[in-house]
Length: 112
Length: 111
Image 1 (spheres, one colour):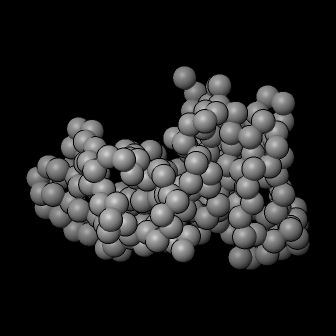
Image 2 (spheres, each protein chain N blue to C red):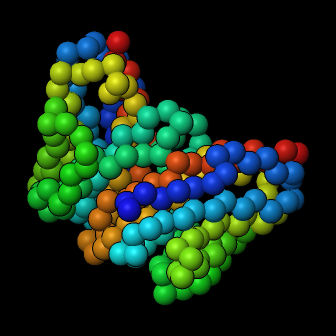
């Protein structure tokens, strides 16, 4: 069975640009969450979606947005990129009413 | 109150030894406490998890000990192996919501 898949795996963007990161959850998982992991720190929660509805939002600026599609895949969008947005962006999926979250390999975003 | 504090920051253990990583929390609403293992360049992998109605859970060489009154939980890795060398994160959540992660422990197991 395929795990959580994220694309692209690596990305280099220039300050001020926009980026879209994609996530496909494990088959049957309807909840998707996004996390930002800066080097040397634990992942920080950005968004949680369940059945296409936003269920939670972390302490991130409005430049960050996300959505979930009818097939439960998800996109994370970041506008007006800053150098500080350079990080590993992780997507996690889980079953309904199940707290076990499984992470993808992440997208390494570098902003120059 | 949403923080999860993890220690130590780094840990060196000899092959065959016991690795112990500790976490503490304040929010008594947390009802799920997982541990994740992360290798460089990879996403975190769920290792083992516990709920507060259980004081200990064991899976293979990995054991979680949970002390509800002290609001602390710990990961024990028995018979540590060089392949266990990774960064370990504790986390906590409320009713399937966002995971609050600790700061991570970099474990190095020397042969």
